[in-house]
Image 1 (cartoon, rainbow, N blue to C red):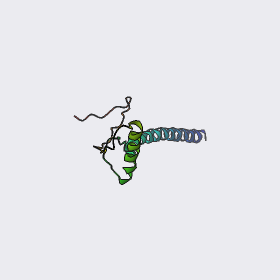
Image 2 (cartoon, rainbow, N blue to C red):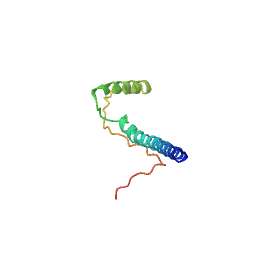
Image 3 (cartoon, rainbow, N blue to C red):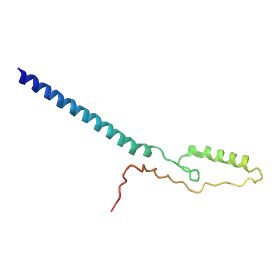
Image 4 (cartoon, rainbow, N blue to C red):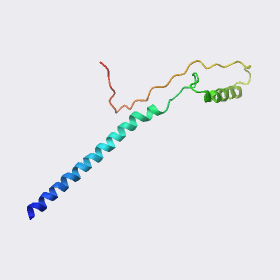
Length: 101
């Protein structure tokens, strides 16, 4: 009878330890997914850039108002957007980065 009980207790301990390991690995993998996915979700557009979407026309108006407020002596010179590009991710210094060889 004691052998059965000790056998069951051993299997319970094994299951508990495997569950704890799975929880740890799940947290680690979830964190890795968040680290790689979060920077890709937002397009970090710079101010100097062409419009990606028609809705960004409002930003030109905002910049024109700021220029008019800060530089009242300037005539109505047309401002043109020159280029747009996405900024690279800020790499975590603790995280190893892949190197292509």
